Image (tube, rainbow, N blue to C red; front, top):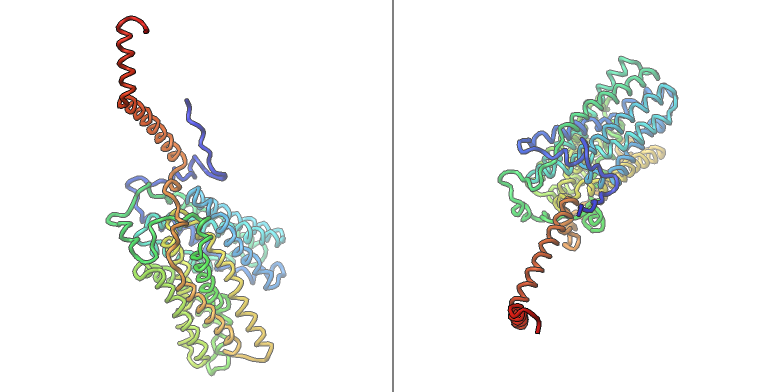
Length: 509
């Protein structure tokens, strides 16, 4: 009798080059090839932080306002959060190669559509291409390697995710000068901008394809030499169980961590988004004001701190624990903001030092949160859970700049200047970080009622075959048991003996 057909979930790639089965690593595959694969995607999509390079030429060529020229970036960040939240389960189901391929196609196609939009002077195509289509590539690409890295590096999850997410923070350091050079070469008119977008789309497609080819998932049951899950689970807040994405969002731990990430990002992005004008405004009334060139250098330093914090602090979390690391991000971050507020414009070096610390914590918070999720919810669907948590980023991306810009504008309208433009914002950030600190303190191990049963982790085909084998064994055991019972039953033995005697006599009585 043929086996019954196994139903596969919708949108599952069950065969071919992009299937999860084709990405299982051979025994000789080195796990140290996985971080470069992740970096090839994150360095590419990190270009989003360099969108400001295109703002002035677009405003000049298409006669746009500053608000309009920021629209593709804003839509892209919103789509990043939404696609990561809604696509996380698909990424877990279909595997990292499929996810990186989707990211590569969407992100590159976004540039090509934008090139067409600039060439035809249809700005809505730029918003559609870079913002909507490219934003989907951002979200899927951002979460695509996270689960795989954690499974390859269960002994050092903070370091592994820090390497990849460091690439997202550092992508702008490559993209910004490269894009500027192309605009100088091709020109800042519609033709030059369109050509620059076209080259971006083609080069990023080639670069991201390296990650598609290199990425692998570990074989089932694989673990690093010398690493024991039981010893790792003995640390506080680290579980050996697993929680599904559906159940994770029903736990208080998920929402407490959502608050932690949201307010940590709000505090960092508030400075990052307005870094250059903020440092110029802060020291405008001093004897040595900050020049435009110095402000640009300050922005570059912040980008380096953002990138370095993603690796340094997330790696440190492997040693001191995720909860302690977030105590540093939120507690010390609040002290840095307090120091800036109290010092005012009297200590320029202190301002720069504290801002660098805040931005390093901003980057570190992004890189540490996947490992925190792994500790709390296990590796089963950590990529999907991470995608849902990134809605905190989308919220913070609106909240942080809104607080800083709105208060600065109102203070300026009231005739104030210097540090007074930002003092209120600084104290609001301290309050948000304090709330985040409290939320982090409230995080406890997940209630076992939310844990998955072991059968949920198995491959559907293997699990069904296992059930069939178990049913077959149970049936055979049942038959054997029945025969055994019949043999042991005295009445049955007597009936059998009587039947045998009658058979020897040649007929029935």
